[in-house]
Length: 407
Image 1 (tube, rainbow, N blue to C red):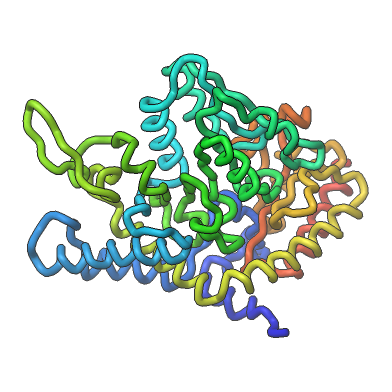
Image 2 (cartoon, rainbow, N blue to C red; image 1 turned 180 degrees about the horizontal axis):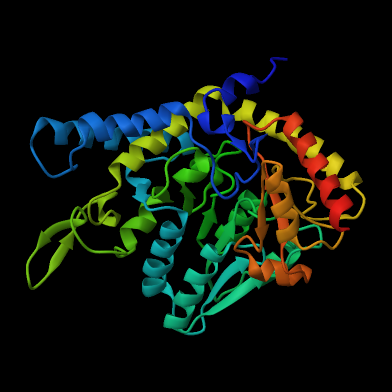
């Protein structure tokens, strides 16, 4: 079996050479944002320095060249997620923007008083609030799928909640707090048996495992570039063509128009119908470069290595005295949320930071989930393919220091 080349990969990420408070950086906040490889940084810098020009507008060489790079980026993303058609790939500002676009456009078109939108208890605020707003505007109701103490979807409850009033299901692929990998393919199948469309929030899945839209059969899938080793301010809305054709545009402006008069505006064809204004074309190209980078490493190799990290960390954390974990599903990514010896998560995080270990503390934009477990927050360590077993050992040493100081 080929050994995963983690040390060589780490050389591609210059930020990992940093020292914090005199200690080598251990970056365990990948659930918030991932670091960027050199080739992504250099691609973005090169475009700013040598090639920048607005796309889809001018007839000069630079504009034509940038337009081609932008549309090539769309093709790269289509191949990466296994979408059926290039017209189904919409560039947005990120996963949040993508969900808002669907929630608004779908809600204005298909939600009526008394209708229901179905989400889960473990959703990120970005997959709660837009649907709440849509329901408030349209007089619909937000229904919530319960979860078990281990942090898994209660599938029997899900089946029972799917009803004649359900107009759409919006569920996360992987919980950003618990790491739970939801059975989204089965959830989609059950919803489709009732002709109910499904939106999947893939922000925490896309960087950890291979996805294929044709196989998954979801109606919408969203993710952010900065979670997949690309730049901020760029993301993807995948939508089946038949849905994107039926939905009205979320925003108006340049690029999304066909013809404008003061009496009426007609809209551009897909995918441009949903890309109003000057797109973040440099971000799109940077995201495509990041996707190409991890594709060359291999999503299966990444998944297997991260699974090894997950199992190693899970074993050590489970055996640590006084540590309570939240999210113990058998099928999960290397995301660990915990509280240590009743020490406030903020205090734990602050001490770990002094040892160069970056984690996140708080509610992780999942306040309803915290209410479900009757806690105020957790420490979250989220790992990825450039992390190492030695860094996990340093985390455990840091937690022992917290225990010695505060427990």
